Image (cartoon, rainbow, N blue to C red; front, side, top):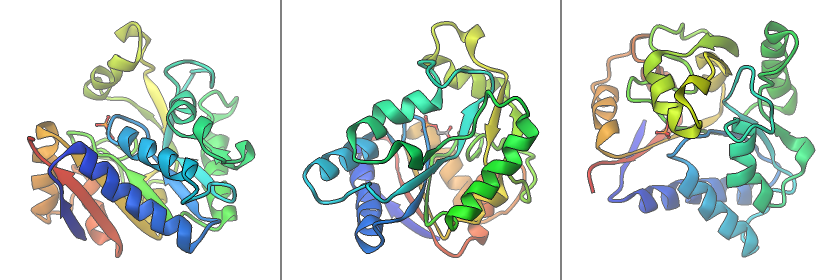
Length: 237
Ligand code: PGA
């Protein structure tokens, strides 16, 4: 595991964007694993700038997002589909048919879970996976206690996660109770992973990860068993 300490959110975003830029320059038809949340917004802005400047292209890129709420329409302002379009996809040269998010409105959610992992495999597997981390160590929506062997699955959101995500909804009661998320094993199958975390709130999680203890009570700790992970993080400034 490689650790890169940064001094600001903007620096974190640039360092992460550099890794994505290099990936796209080496392999223009990359399969990218993407994440939502506050952490990646700056990196997406940076990638939009670089694409518009002609330094990179998403023309041959295929993307798979980590997760989506169950029960929200794609077009809902709080859906991850909307988040990704507003923050990245609407501003770059990606083909709509190459964009994948789990379908939280699928009639048969169990089938959708199996199909999502199959789609990733069919595409050739994820080359570079981006992750944020929850204060409780969750990655995707895999909360503490999730099996390291989990594939894409339906999860009940914890109260702490629902409270944290309430900022994206008009009313905290509107936060869905369930989500569909790539599992920990689905994430570990990526060839390379980068995890970004900035701010005082995340420092405790960073310390836990640094301690080297691997336990299902702290989902991100399984990343210590992956051969190619970079953590880009920073503290209080
Ligand atoms: P954040 O969320 O980027 O909004 O902090 C990360 C996460 O909870 O996985």
